[in-house]
Image (cartoon, rainbow, N blue to C red; front, side, top):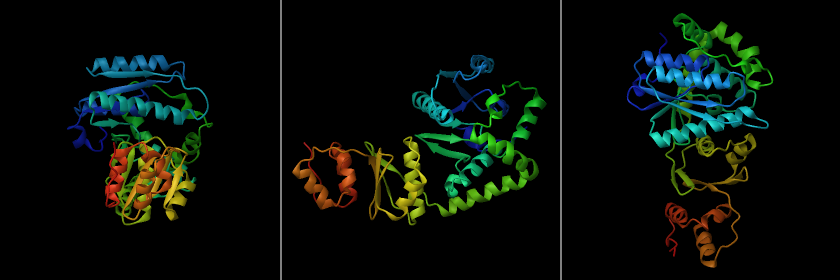
Length: 338
């Protein structure tokens, strides 16, 4: 039987498995059951294949056979960039379930091949270490704690496990379609490398995670309304990683140019949706607003406190957030709000 990462955590928390019915999630389903982990499953039907409805029905039947709850979500996504929109739809559904039913952990069935493919794609996009290690065994997204218990097992080992135990599963035909970038990396690069250097690749990821933990200083993020803030870490790279993490949790992925600008600059409007302001002691992130109705008293308070002008549109209509910023900046006289 394959070992699972973070088994001690899974035995203590309330667990929700993102279940597609494919090779990886089916293996994880049966491994959780074998380890006596109590869990439920969530399945999204995108209606992209002739077997989509059959897969959704099979997920419900499998859950019922093991006395588990199965949550299903049906959607049809039109237009370009299907993978990205499907991912966002899936995580929105998972977040809804976590908040409604108080799940502690959300499990995804990413495995070692997925991790290598991601690293290769990010490497070819000019990314840094945190982005190269974007698929981690424990991660946080939009208030959810994500765990990936299969991350040290490769695809061949997982398929062998399913075959050995005669567990049925569905095959996603899109995995063979090289119109998707990830499949190009999978077929041409990651699969041959994994077959030849599996153990070395596994060790390298362990070392990289250790190095990343040593290099990147973690921060404690707090918020008031939609204003997010944290005390600045000692190095700029950790600061950029923190900003990027906050924005990802809000559904925005920073571009390489935005990250490069923030390495030297102190404020930036990001994606026309958010403003980041790097102060001497704290960094603030808030929705970007061009609110023009600012009275003289408000403007004077902002000038005296040296509040970044790009932040003022949002703060003009959010007095609690303004009071927090004034306090953290050491303003002598907080604004009195009616």
